[in-house]
Image (cartoon, rainbow, N blue to C red; front, side, top):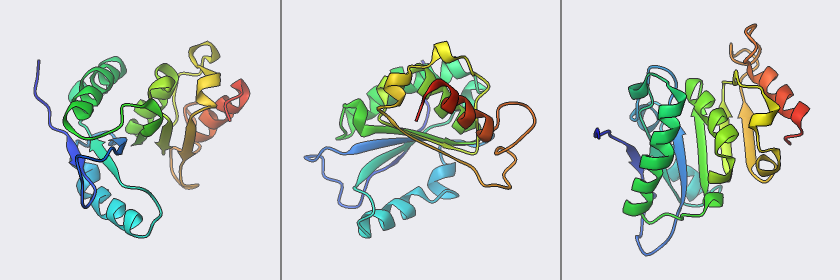
Length: 183
């Protein structure tokens, strides 16, 4: 029942008669829907990647997860029940889960990892940048579906998220994925 803003990048020459893949991007703690579009330079990066033939044109959508106080259930509900249906109703994007990606930085990485756990069948790609997850219960993961998806997990070797001491580092999370058979 609330109005929230989204950041939406459409590729140069966007044509509503074509169907595009969609990349959903979450900011880190304290950010909002504008952060990736400005500081993160998504429009510039996407324009250059497309121009250089390194990726195909896609619609990129950013959201404000701080609005929910990082409550993962509310964030996931907003993404799956509000944001994706809104984007698919208002932009010429594929409704096929394999044509959707979700990625995030830091706290947004945890949103990504939670979606990979609860909704792996809703996305074909996940990108987790500088963040692990505290949920490490093998029973909660659809390993077969995750092995169909493309997972990209990364952090700098000096990044505090890579090897922290609280059990939810990138290193711990990738080791957990290895232990349950996620490639």
